Length: 273
Image 1: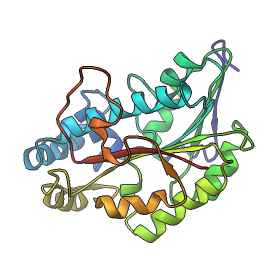
Image 2: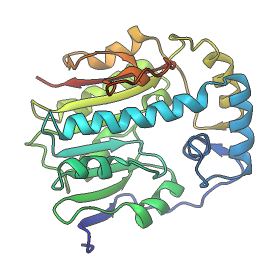
Image 3: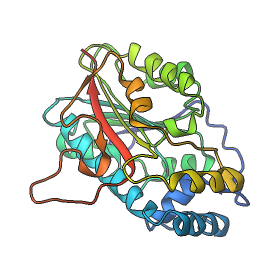
């Protein structure tokens, strides 16, 4: 227990050595967002991808803004007090717990990632309000059973939970497996729970994702793929889409006066009835 609330790091806490010789998604994403938690191979690959796919920086920023808008909606209008953020990445401004607890100080958040550098920063940076709780679980999205077991130490699965899958299912290369992961996670949540997701696409002007991802898969880790809107819609089977549905994440529930450019990254929030 910290002075600012309940903060913890859970299984697996393996603290593997950080391999800085190969570009890694969490660090490259941090670079595109203007962060400093990256190394020369991350910047080199990030610059090359940006030259092939110039909009990637705006995609990263739009995805981050989507997170803030989605969490504000879920903690506010939807009344959710528990969040399971899988594939959290390196902490930056407006992390899930900061946005949620600004609306609802008693919100409880569990972060999940399997990058040892993210684990180091989670220990140092993820705090909580006094009324709420923030936990970190080192686990892989491919193993939802382990995620659920560890998250249950902080979250009450008898009460609604918002499952956050932002920019993570694109690292599950087999679509059937990705669908099964989402179903396993959402089946463990009670009615009134939500799924928030973002995912890169070859649509919405994203044709350049194809060669950019081919370069990424040859030079960085983990391997990645894009999906069409129809493929992404499979993750939503049995759920009720919240307006405005499956759209470019840059255009989901805009504040008054906002007119951002469409980016090739789908985003949506859906409710388990």
